[in-house]
Amino acid sequence: MLKRYNISQDIIVLAILLFIAPFFFQNDFIYEIAIVSLLNALICVGLNMLMGYAGQVSLGHGAFAGLGGYIAVILSSNYGISPLFSIFIAIVTMAIFAFIISKPILKLRGHYLAMATLGVGIIISIVLNVEDELTGGSDGMSVDSFSVFGYEFTDSLQWYILCAVLLIFTIWMFKNLINSPFGRVLKSIEGSQKAANSVGINVSHYKSVVFVISVVIATLAGSLYAFFSGFISPSEASFSHSIELVVMVVLGGLGRVYGAIIGAVILTILPQLLTSFEDYQTLIYGAIIIFVMMFMPKGIASLFDDIKRRLFAQNK
Image 1 (cartoon, rainbow, N blue to C red):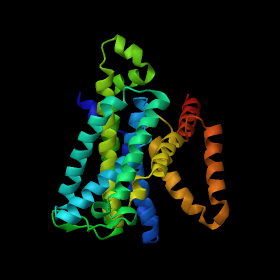
Image 2: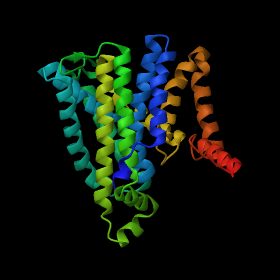
Image 3: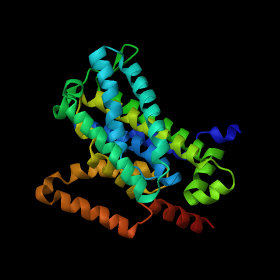
């Protein structure tokens, strides 16, 4: 039983890579890209659990992250609640919200489910835009500095370490959860809901639980991004942001723990690399995504599977 909770070699490798990476960062801009990549990866890990293991498509996770961020920011900036406690309240609030909406929404399947989550996301975005007095409307609102028990995060390296530690911990929890009986149930639901129902699995319950988990992770990442950037606007809860997150998961590889991270890092960095192409940026960006999906339909992470197989064959 305890063996299941050991830290695997791949997590140790990831931790080493994240530790080494800052030595190559030359300025705060690179740190900012790295931090945003880590936070996007954090959301994508939870979204990958929902899409890749429970077979549920969500087009509203950008909105959930944005709403969670707004709740934390409003509590901290307007009511003087400590940032850490405000994030905790935001997580609890969004968990309850996700559980309530999951009951009717997750009864749907396929594109009907996607449209339902899209509808919820659009409603959230509209509310954030029109509630000027509370959210600042389309202009957004400034955010107080982030501190934990009096320790204020002012340096980019501090934020990088915090986000890296949270990502590693989330992946560790994710891998243990997927390798547990709960994870095997999710895989059976993804394979066939009818078959899962026939053996007595409460499909609705498990789908609700994994949906809540993914929304909680999105809330945490969205809240941290707001405090890191010092500003939040409804664009964080936009439809385009939700689509970006889905593309990150699919591009990296559905149902692959590290696929979500690969997709998040690539699609966060790629627009920055294409800025010099000006008018052709969107065209090149789209072409790269189409190329990857055509020749690597299982995601970029599938390349590593091929490398592993070849190495294994050579060792034989």
